[in-house]
Length: 283
Image 1 (tube, rainbow, N blue to C red):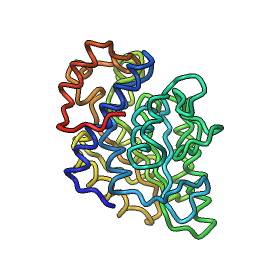
Image 2 (image 1 turned 120 degrees about the vertical axis):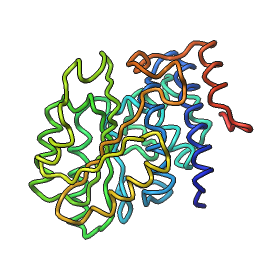
Image 3 (image 1 turned 180 degrees about the vertical axis):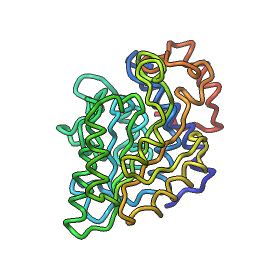
C-alpha cells in the first residue's frame, strides 16, 4: 500500500531512530551520513522507485538501486527493513558476528535489496552504468538509481564513469550525490575541494539538477520526479542533493565529527528525545 507524505515523514523519524540504535548497540558504524540521507532513501523507496517484492537479483522490469558510499549502510538497512525487504527484527544483528548486515553491504549472504558490495568507495556508479546498459540491451525501460558521496568523488574511477555514461548516452541512469560538504577527515573543501561541481558535471555531458533542501522530504520527492522526467533524452541525469550530516540530532550536525562515531547511552537518550514519535515501532 502506498504511504502518504505524512506517513513517510513519520517514517524518516523512525529510520533515524533505527540508525542510532544500530550503531549504539555495537559502538561502531556511520550515523552522520546515514541521518543526512534519510529523506532520500524514504523518498526513493516510498514514492519514486518502481521495485518488486520478493527481491530478485536480476531485477527485470523494475528500477534498480545501487549504494556506492556503502559506509552509510545503517540508513540503507533500516529503509529496506521498513519497506519489507527483510524483517525489522534483523536490524538488531547489525555488525555482529554472523550477521547479514555487515558494516558495509555485501552480497555473499544474499540480503534482500543489496545488489553490490560497496565497502570500497568510488565503484557504485560504474556498476550502475553496467546495469543500465544491460537494461537497454534487454529492452527493459526501467531506470537505474545510484547514490554517491561528495567526498567519494575524490576517487578517480568516478570521473571515468561520468565521462563514459555521457559519451555512451546512458540516459536511463540517475545518480544522486549526497552533497553534505563533509567527509571522514573534515570538510571536503579542506581535504580536496570539488570546485564548481554543477559546472563540472555539465561539462562532462550530464543533465544536472540541484536541490538545496535535501532534508525536506517533499523537496526530495520533487527533485527525484523531475530527474525521472529528464531520462530518455540522450544524457545521464545527476542530482546534487545538499544535505546536512547528522540531520535530526542537533549535536551531530555542523561538523564531520559524527561521520563514523556511535553515541553513548546518554547521547542516545538525548537524540531519541529529539526524534520523538508518539508510538515508535522500535525493534
